[in-house]
Amino acid sequence: MQDLSVFFEQEHFIETKAPNAYQPLQWGANIVCATQKSFHWGDADVVIVGCGDRRGQDRNAPYSHSANAVREELYKMYYWHSDIKIADLGNLLPGATMGDTRASLVTVLTEIYNAGKIALILGGSHDLTLQQYEVFKKAEKMAVASVADMLIDLDEAEEINAGSYLMDMLTETPNFITHYSHIAFQSYYAHPQMLETLDKLRFDFYRLGKVKENIDDIEPVLRSSDMFSFDLSAVRYCDAPANIAGSPNGLTGEEACQLTRYAGMSQQLTSFGIYGFNEEHDSHGMTARLLSQMIWYFIDGYLLCKTESRLTERDEFMVFHVKFTDNDTEFLKSKRTNRWWMKLPNQTFVPCSYNDYLLASGDELPERWLREQERLM
Image (cartoon, rainbow, N blue to C red):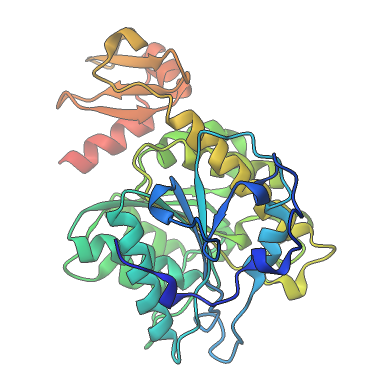
């Protein structure tokens, strides 16, 4: 296992705090930090990485230490998840160029991935999502990606930036994205023809209104994801005051926490990145507080994920036989987490929601069933 300390700043956030600054049951007393003598990130379940490079948004932007503002709030929270071990590597050293930073981040994330840990990135500009993907590209393994963002970053540009990175991630060849889902986009900021083109690729897009109407339907989307990227712009301005480039509409803080909890519940997720936070614009530290709560809920979901049974353990599931529109199938419901799966004609089970079961029981074709079938063709 590679020593990653050379990629990180020498001073860690925890060193700015007095000894015994945190109570025994607070996160700050339980997270293992890179500068501590007992540090060994290989023992952790989740590894925190700060990367404040914002040059993908503004090429002249200075390196940001906003990740420490999130740590300020996160470390004060109470640690209800003693079965989960968390390590914090600190903040990545800024590269001489944006490309240098990206290369360092890929190296770090690849090591975390190869060690079977989950990387939690406190990021700068949203284009760093591409480095989450490049881990799979280097490993030549297919990935399911999900992004929460009010915008769909598919601009055409000479250089990769926060507004264009999806073009590279979704269209380059060879490509290792098996499926892509975009969560909470706002229709008035999305080009209609672009959505039509991506729909033909069988990618899924959930507009903000759809997410707010029934957020539980997004849980199966995140349960199927290998990587999840969350841009702060997905949250409405009043719930995240640092989001000055955002919108008066968006997810509430509570909905953002619910989505990150769903992401933590995924048994196949390998990385989760939060991007777009700049503490300089934060009012009373309220956005940093929201982000820390999102992380708390992510870990809460991960704890629940560890209790889930395998689908082969049929005694741990309730089985419902359903016939709809000339299809005979099975729905499974976990006795431990109340989550649902549905069986496709190829005999595989895919995550679904209770709403999908209700539609099938009423002899209606669930859209999720149809989309999964289209992707199999």
